[in-house]
Image 1: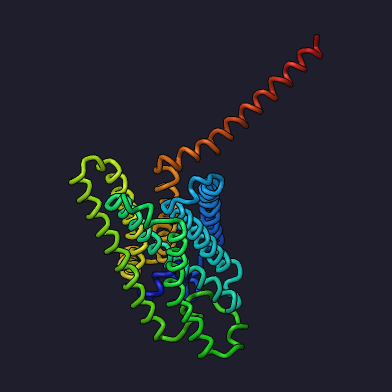
Image 2: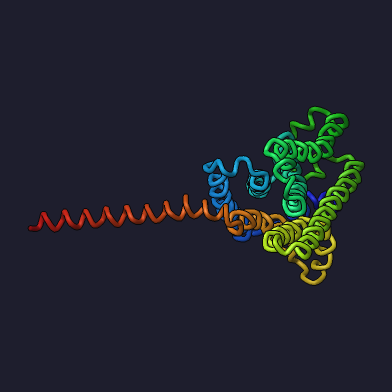
Length: 338
């Protein structure tokens, strides 16, 4: 397994299913349980993400804040990534092989969204750094328009390196290849060996840049917190936020060590490679998607206030309405008896 392949969700999904393609196959019960878990995870995360996204769009106060714009972009990006990878996972069990053209689409979307997440984290860390270390110019530098421009730039630098895989494949494969059916792995569609080395190079560049950005912003905010006692509380919150971003990034970087870890576990737990890869997918690619809504959706005071206002209060109103309705019914029944 190549290092670059492990970096994309589609690649990891393929690694999980690789044994299916070669020797091992899950039993019906095991396959059913795995797919059930994945679908339940998708429903749970989709519900959480939909609440967070709805809260953002129902409150104009967030529209001009770059902090929340970048956050909601990450939530939507993660939701797309999760939907695509879980769809691929389920399709690999139901149909086993799919049309190459559809496979290309799924893999590229999964790769784009996977690569975008850590770069978006770097953008959020820089925004926090400017807010704490250069507060007088924060409103001037971090405008909504510049934030949307940054998002466009993020997508540009994340899409361009990997879209070339498609162009190389179009140039090296016949058109009939795109009408065939394959087990949907990245290496089954984008076969040119040079693409593997290209992916490895870009993976190292992207994750190194993001890692050093998070370290630099964290240290700068830590320094400001020690020097300026008046900004200590806000700096501490920003520092904790960047630490959480760092945790998410480390989870993403765990994909680089997956081949080595799997090789070791294969000797420790022989015959359990499918379960190991399934657990690896949940830890490396699903768990970070749970963290995104928590960092701002629950942890952020301003966002939490609006979450409570629109969803907790609505539930209370609904319960109150049902109670009142039942009381009215009981009163009417009592009058009829009389």
